[in-house]
Image 1 (tube, rainbow, N blue to C red):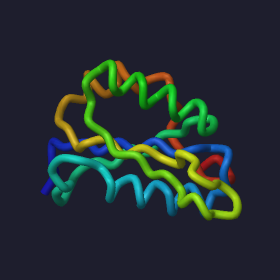
Image 2 (cartoon, one colour):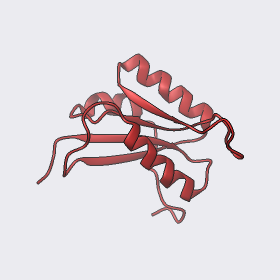
Image 3 (cartoon, rainbow, N blue to C red):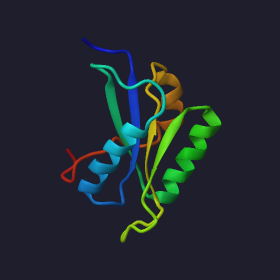
Length: 113
């Protein structure tokens, strides 16, 4: 069964691929709103780095899109208190999401696949 819901997550590209996967999972779980139903389309996008992710958060605020942030623990060795990923509330309004996020590339594996 397919769903009309789309669940967008934005993760930093400047971290390792394994870290990206973990942070994308965290962001999906931190997303506000309804939990995705079976058949929901998951869209994972790349932000260049933490600064870019903060700009995206501001863009989402301006567009009125609900989202949750994944911030690393203050005592983390590599990324103390840094913004790592954003999980948007699942939505059926792809037009609104595209307007806010269309400049971001799809996340790809280390080989580009």
